[in-house]
Image (cartoon, one colour):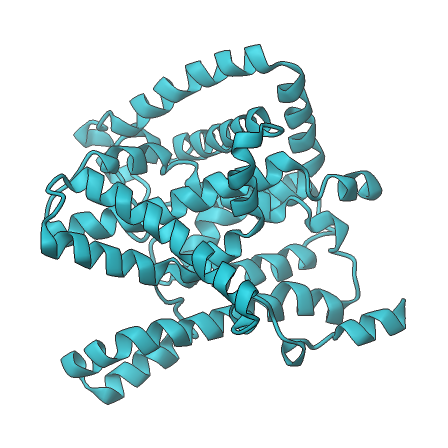
Length: 364
């Protein structure tokens, strides 16, 4: 079973799904950032709200999809690949982000509080980097419970997702909201691949199901709940475009998240093999590049467009900011590859390994 899964590890639809996810992630930060700065909403707000139920669930599902292939590796190698790897990029890009934000922050609150904010970011994930911070926790926790009954862990994680957890701790709150999808990717990987095979064999039926899912998702997202149910709404962690609709109710959010992530898988399968979608596949294969570096082109483009007022339509501004925020890291990555300088930005150097390639070859 593991060898069969390994053959699928670079299948097109997986990378395309990751490409779709990273665009949606950039879109929410770009759009809401523009709207907060402008003080008004644009038409892109509705795209962000539509994707809210499944945007992060799909990202976490795919992140856990191939964990079964490596979860039984020796602890040192496992920690190197699944903890140290992400810790390196978190510390590096946290420092880079602070290098840009610290001068303004220091002028506003002082040097000592700014330094305190930097140190606090090792406990409370900073800005857009919370996903990189949380993944190692998921990897370690899943390994610790790998011998537990799958149904029990899934039921427990689903219960956490349905609870209205909002403690203020990003790690705790997002763990409760997202772990069920990551664990499902790990534990139900074979089922996900079977669904993908069915989609590939039944494109017409798949399109019909997508045509039913899309308006139902929109209806539940944009239909406000009655006042009697407002107290049961799931918390909008990080202000991600919640509309106060039925999609944010317990159980409904879990069902919509599951349906939406399968819809993204289906769309990715339908797009795989098409030459014009190769850019999306490349983007997914290098999604960490975009995720780490999109903050700077996003912020620069937002400020430039809003201050000049060249484009008065806020929705269009949000779309342009999203496009530049996705393309900017790709250009930077290309320059790094072309020049040979700065590879440490996206590739972990040998000194940042606890289980070095030389040790792995020796063990083999």
